[in-house]
Image 1 (cartoon, helix red, strand yellow):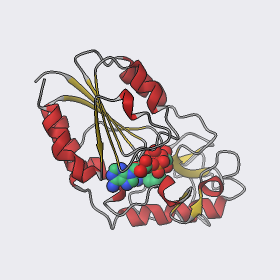
Image 2 (spheres, rainbow, N blue to C red):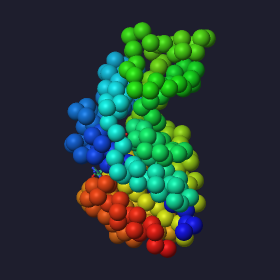
Image 3 (tube, rainbow, N blue to C red):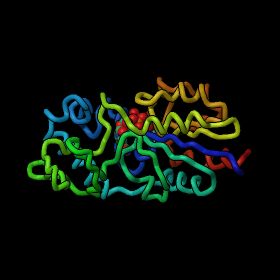
Image 4 (cartoon, rainbow, N blue to C red):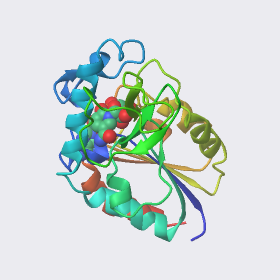
Length: 236
Ligand code: NAD
């Protein structure tokens, strides 16, 4: 089949890999208030706590693995013309074989220097926030170095791509939304604007997502939903 598929994922798809979602634990992410560690206004003031938090997330990432939902998304991408948009900062989609994933909120495996805009890979290593410096010779900043993550109260440069891709979904195309609470992104607005087929998977009904806007609704874990989603995708 030749329709185009746009997949928009959230933290829910990585939950079964052992990475906690944010909303499911009462507004805490791995026991931390995101306002303290993921805040564009205060991160410099909370420099050490911010780095400790993201160092933990990054080193934890080395210990987890993609699950059946990540692998299914990679398989769908091989079968259909697909764009994968994700709010996740983990790299499990890539490790499952997805290509050109649009990370709307940045990636854990990169650092960025706000003084000179240098971005570099750090892999799964902890950043030495006491001594580490921007590797660019003429910069060497220490306090301007941060994880390459979009914090709350900051602009997200890749949203422009998201709006374009979602705006281009045609009536023969499909929007598939998986594992997002719709608190950060306006899922209902997207669903209202899309003329094509709309599919959603979430653990349970969400107050910020109007399931009636979707043609197919699958409640349950992402890995439980992949069989039903594969069946829907294979029908014209
Ligand atoms: P969220 O935490 O707000 O919502 C997660 C959603 O996933 C909830 O609706 C929940 O019911 C659902 N869910 C939980 N387990 C599931 C499962 N097994 N299968 C399917 N659905 C499941 O997540 P969000 O909407 O992505 O927004 C949170 C923000 O926090 C994001 O912007 C993201 O950058 C960040 N975050 C990222 C990660 C990650 O990269 N893995 C993890 C936590 C938070």
